[in-house]
Structure formats: structure tokens, C-alpha cells
Length: 453
Image (cartoon, rainbow, N blue to C red; front, side, top):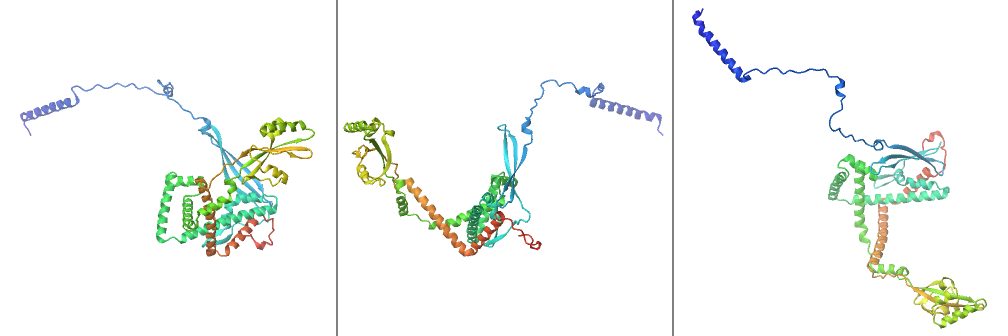
């Protein structure tokens, strides 16, 4: 137990420490504590927000209603009856909206295709294989799809024979074009070396990337753009370009070296068209015919004016001949007028005439007639040494020879790849076209026969 005297220093220390602590708090907080801030509290209801704002009001821009209205859509159907009674329904969708740039209504027609309504018992060929080219099957539907609009139009001819002739011609022409394209493409692909195939793959890859980059930068936009432009996807467009380039290359290497146009060929064609490039001059003949009894006074006027060296036109006007005495135009060959349709006496009278000369009168039983060359007309001529004409003739000859050489080349390909089967394929395709578009209803025999194809 501590003595009371000993506790005094401890109390003294406690007081000193308390004083030091108070001073430290005063230094940190401040000399005197801050008074409390009085706040006014009030209730806020919906009326506090009903007062209009002060200052400038914000601008509100409204869009015209026609620009945000949805487009109008109208469906149109047209029915066409074929020669055999089959009805084809053609559907179109018309979309009408206001063009923001012109503020006028614009319409766009969307073709939704055709729908054929078959009659009861009518046979309808869906698909048929007509042959193969280099191992690739050729279906009738591929060819009909390209010419169906023209075939449907031709089948509406009320004359069955005329309709059949037109449809056959359309089908044969389309088939020949398809065969030629397939044969040339097969020949081009068969001649590609391994190195060329590698280069072709690289070119196709670059073509696909370029196509996508030029049409939006991504595949979706490129697909949409190609569908609108060419009704193709990106793959179909690349394949189309590949086939076109291969065909152009094989024709350049196989056909163009055989096309040779010489100067003699150009001269021969020029001579064949001599009448067009160097036409003969034309004389315009005049004639004054007067009756001896009724127009004796005018005959005397003509004789007097000829003596006075008046022109034929002046004389014709003086006696009232229509059109200043103009009669007909006559071609001049080698300086002589070609008047073979006239009598010998008249030819002898007219043949020596030159521009400005008046013939001796042709004294007939009841009339007197004078002739003259009123004027000479020389049509424009083109010399064989004209550069533009030479280029035109050479280009025409070159195009003709290219078509002939290409036809010979395709015939050689047909013998190598197809032989006699091409005729059978064509006959088969024509029969299918007649069954589908022209032939009248032929009822099926028995239920066990089933569908036609």
C-alpha cells in the first residue's frame, strides 16, 4: 500500500497528461468547435414539379408522318391460260412508300414467281435426267428455268403448230448453248496442270475476298448485294467468274490462232459492196409534155425559150409543168444512164444528154415532149484506203471467222465427249418440253401406273 504522500506525484502527472491531450485536440480541431448548421426540412409533393422551367426552352424536332409510315403492300395476281387449257398464276407484290429525297411516292414490283394449276389427271413432269457431259448430269429443269418465260409466251399462240414450232426452237437453242458451255468448260478443266490448279485456287480466293470487300466488307452484305444484282450467292458468283475465265482462255488458245484475215479478204468484201461504198451518180431527168391541139401556144413558148437559151426549169415553170418539170431519177453507170425500161427511140434521145442539156422534141401523133438532165447527184463515196472502213471490214471478217472456227472446235469436242448422244439428248428435251407446256391432256391408264415421273 502506497503512502498518501507518495500518491501526489502521480496525480500531478495525470493532470499534466490531461492538459497535454487537451492542447493536442485543440490544435487538430481548431481553437473552438464549429457550431451546428441549421437545416430547414419541408415536405415535397407533385405540385413542386408543375412550374414551367425558367430560361430558354429545348427545341423539339418532329419527323413528318409520311416518312415514318410503313410502306403499303399490294398483291397482284395474273392468270395466263396455255394452249392446252392449263392455267398459270403469276404473282407480284407491289410495295409503295414515300421517297424521302423526292417526297413522292415510289413503287417497287417484286416478282414472286408463277404457280401452275394442274387439271385433274394431267401429267406434270417434275424432273428428268436427259444426259451427261463429262460425267456431270444435265437435267431438263436447269434448261427450262432459263427460258420458261419465253416458252410460256410462245405456248399462248392459238395456232398449235405455230406454238409447237416456237417452243421447239427455244428449247433447242437453249440446249445447244448449254452443251457448248459445258463442253468448253470440261475441255478447259481437263487441260489444267497441277501448277495451274494451284494458281487457279489462289485466284479464286483473291476473287472471293475482293468481291466481299467491294460489296460491304462482310459476307452478309456481299450476299445481299449479289442477290439484288445478279440473283447469285458469293459462291455462285465466284463459280460463274471461274467458268467464264476458263472458257475465255481455252477459246483464246484454240480458236484465235486459226482466225487470220488477209488484205485480199478485205478487198474481196469491199468489191462485193462496191455499190454501197462507191455508188454511181444519179441524174434527175425533167420532162415537158404538151398536147399539140390544146396547148399549141405553150409549144411555141417552149420553142422560143429554147432558142433564147433559157434553162429547162425556167421553161417548165413558164408553161406550168408541175414540180419544175421533174420526172424521174436515173442511175448513171460508166457515164451512161441506165434506162432499160424505156423504148429504143426514147433511149437514143436521152442517152447522150448531160447536165444542162435539153433534148430534141419527141414528136408523137398527139403531143410533143422535151427531156433534160436537170441536175446530177453524187452520193458520198468511201475509199478502200479509208482507215476506219478498213478496220470495220477487218473486224466484220474477223468476227465471222471466229464464229466459224468456234463452231468447228465445238463440233470436235462433241465428237470426242458426246458422240451421237447429243442428238438423243436434244430429242428427249424437246419431248419433255412438249409434255410440260403444250401437249393436251392425256389421262393415265390405271392406278397402278402411278405418277408420270
